[in-house]
Image 1 (cartoon, helix red, strand yellow):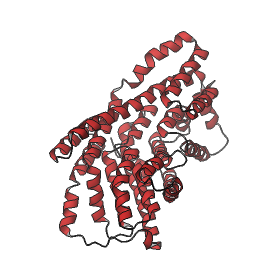
Image 2 (cartoon, helix red, strand yellow):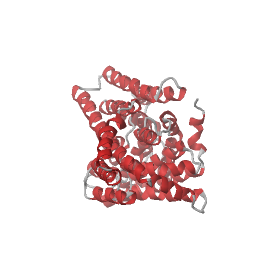
Image 3 (cartoon, one colour):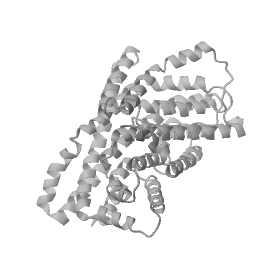
Image 4 (tube, one colour):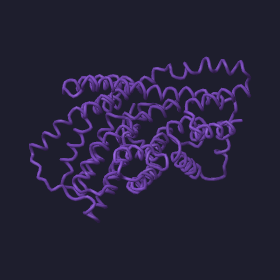
Length: 429
């Protein structure tokens, strides 16, 4: 029954049924078949409220609110201009500035889609204006935007922590070094390509005065304050992730108003967007918990865990198979849905195999970054198409492909060198 239910869920998703409703419907009907109508109705009466009425979940709307305040106040543009001045003389300087800007903005965003949408409006026109190859400009933004999903505050890290009952604070801090490594790898790729073929990324010839550089950096101070509040506060133990979200959201609003950057429309849009995205995530969570309750009585997670942990192969090959599974799922399924659908089944096996749950969480989030770039349903591909309508989807995929290869290589680095991920969380109390 468990395997049949998963097949039916995928079938409903292919037919266009919303993820939350597909999970809820299949979970409820499966429970009716195995446990009876009365118990199934009891589950429907208890699980929807119990699954989201948790203090830890309040961090999601707070992080979203902070990111939306920063977005509508134009702080992303400030970061890009500041990075542009710092990387002006490096081969592929504007593309390098885009990667660095996305990494820094990720510290106040938490959403790879939001970062990609913002930078596609700011960076792509700037690069094309300065003679950059259009495929390179598109690929850089498509790849760098998802860095926000790794660098704290990461919404996906919070969701993973809630599904697997793993420390959210340590998960958020664990994403810092991997996020930096991924950004450096992208910048190295840009450097090599610009060196080999300068015509695709001409040097920025305009001389930049010290005054211009100082002003550009000066305008980016607000992002630095927000990043320090979140990362410094959580790492030091001064406050919890939820408290960090509340304080950072307040400061993002206060700084935006102090800088006179947030209009009434921007304020309304920030609140509205935060509510819509929170509602979407929570609705998926309700469906996932109903489906998860059914899976528990079907005993599928236990059977899969038992099967994987007794395979006569080294545990690394089992992990490699799981990573390939997520690569495939990411090509046609949103990773939030994939996490809720698969982690209740796979995570018990990961624990029994002796893998660190925080390290595995970083692998899953890296897979989510890759999923945003993989055709045919990578969401960033469609955002880029909307930003550059004159570019064909084939051109967009070609532009993203080298960065997709680097993202997969970076995933391999995290697998082979787990201490890269675990160093900072290991220093926390």
